[in-house]
Length: 313
Image (tube, one colour):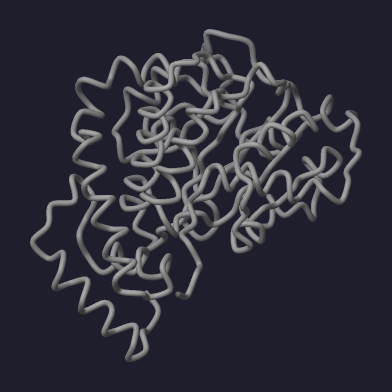
């Protein structure tokens, strides 16, 4: 953690005194946690304290301990199609969460929220186990094949926004958005009318023609050997939910496959469904872009939250 000035240290000491004896329901009550909440509220002690207290209460109400017991079957259903999972790390140790909205397989609000929280908690656990000191994660969002029928309900979108903005602050490093169709922009304008300018700067729009090409921001930040083939990487191993969920919680999918000796050129693992479109086919797709694209996707990522309020009041 960066060195703190006198005012920031005073705020940190206040957080330590307030929460030293609190149970975070699986969230460590330490300087790393305090620092995230303080930064999210610009070191305003009252606001940061309120935010963290509300997170502690939310985690208890959510019953976080049930992620591995009572919620297990629900998470298995939600994860079956590979719509969201932790796979690999960037060059600085940030966990990568792959998201494929086209693989949405339920409209179950409670189930989607449980799966979201499971994915966030697993990404954090994977980074802790990796031991590179990273506390932020990146999203690889592939919108290939997306239509309005794949959009979550407004209720689920709002709850997602609430959870990630208020209970996972200062977690987003970058959101790489690939193959985003224009129908997606309109939907998420309804979800997030206010866009955090800090979040906007963390959006990386990847054009179809850039996928698989040198110079693309995705490949500057992430080793192509780590990335899935479908997004221009070299890892040909398909996602298999049963292997992912059956592996250690603190391990991402790549780590599990490596531990099992599944080679990167071995594509005989059964997926139980159709694969995603290849890079070559997508590269030939329409590559039109307009000035409003970054704002539209920023609204999507704002709906994914991961940033705190930046006010100074």
